[in-house]
Length: 552
Image 1 (tube, rainbow, N blue to C red):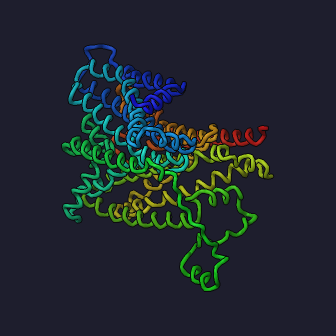
Image 2: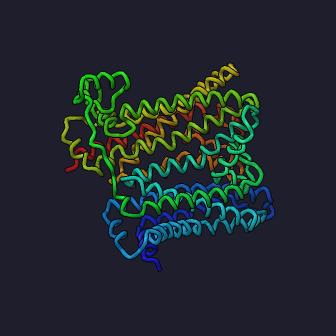
Image 3: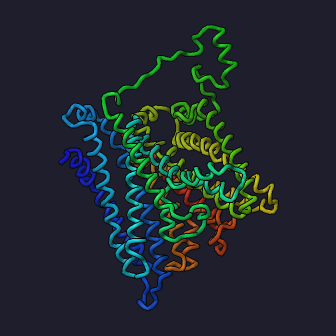
């Protein structure tokens, strides 16, 4: 037996957190079905069992997405940082054997996650109306292919990054792009005649990279956001695309599993201020912000912690911020054009929910990445002790950290605003609704930022805080949607409305007129609840910073 397999798999299982997580998943998947189990066996119908199976399937998909990518995302980079990867490469094992051992350990753990769902799937089958092969079997087959793709992708990312938290952060971002962003071209181009047929065909194939259309086809779902997602026979395309992409990811990772993985070529660099006068003048003309110029001192009116975050974080530096603004401008123009062409074939009422869901996904993916390491990153790198020596108060430290994330989020979220503007130009009477939606998106961002920063501050290591923050934020925003999917089976109208009040996502979809959300009264209660939750989370963050400042 490959010793790396035993080391990886047993190493994961030895953690008490892993055992607790598997037990929690088993209970959660079982409760998903038990809560919807009919009291009288005579009331069981095919429609009822399909509804139960649908909620169970989406819950299982979410559990796999949350848990599986985190382990391979840190597998290789942890070996490199712990100085054990060199020992593995010097062992009699080949690079292929090391890779097979590592990926096999992750896949075996993923298999255990799927095994935890067997009691729930057995209960779904016992209710009747669910096919063992065409529905349950295909659901697990799609999940196995998805696990293979995401595991190989995470291993590839882990072989390139230098820190474990960067591996987790980038992996979750790419996973959500594969899951949701790949659906957008097909969704926007559907029904338009302005594009050549080969471009529409490419968008259809790109859409099949995501497992969501295949799973929606298996579950027979046609709810909100399903337009453009369900097409005939996506399962075969998804399997071929998954196998092809997994093979490419594995080959690229194997190509790096040698001594070249430790090579990091770095330029000596040259400060602009030390160059000749004509070179300095030329760079003044060519660069709006010269990345090689010495930074000026921090003005008295700026928060020094905020400036420190911008200058130490890669995407906080001015040259990267300008590139981010340029990217947002390009995305804005593209979304404006697509919103205009799609409005002619879809109708304005269909575009609104898609734009809302796009911005929610942006917030859920980006916010934990930016805010989870605000405190844990300082503690992990040893910078917290230096920060404690400064005369800065807890309030200034917290505000500086928070503001460094707020500005970056605002620039990214501006990318989708032209879509709303074009919607208002097409249908001016939607102006008040769009304003309410923008307020909902504001509170979604504030709530996600508060939860991410508070949860991330509770952990000592950045990788752990990033993983825990992603899981917490996604569960917090996804759980009300799962309750909404189970409306009237077993959750009544009041229960679903209460669940939707936990986040302003349901309120935004309600205001924009998304199908299935029209009958709920969520405003302004959703804003007040979001404000209270955000305030509590910011208090938790402030208390944690105050406690760490006083620790000896």
